[in-house]
Length: 156
Image (tube, rainbow, N blue to C red; front, side):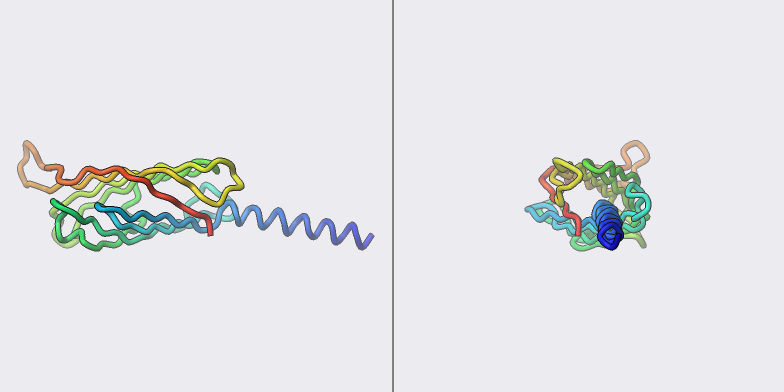
């Protein structure tokens, strides 16, 4: 009887640990000639598809990059869409920066996959678009940065 109780307790702990594993914090990072970025997202332990927090920091660099984007924070207000289904994770971020007097729009799409629900890492790519706000009603934006590169994410 004691073995049965111990086995059931162990099974519950393992099952609960898998739920936390599936829905824990996920960190994404990239660093290349155009973008340095680190993102952190947290998903609910009860519903692994429900996002409970999202934040990060980024720096757009290189020729044509506005100096105001040399370092900026990413928050959940910028998150337009997200998708998490176990094997695939996606984020769509859009913001007008700097916040007090915007002169640029940033759009960032992150698309990642992992081989199985048990793998701890996601691999994929991001697509970055930075547009200068021109104030012209016929052409309100001018794309100044357009870039795609790899990104990786890991469950912690």
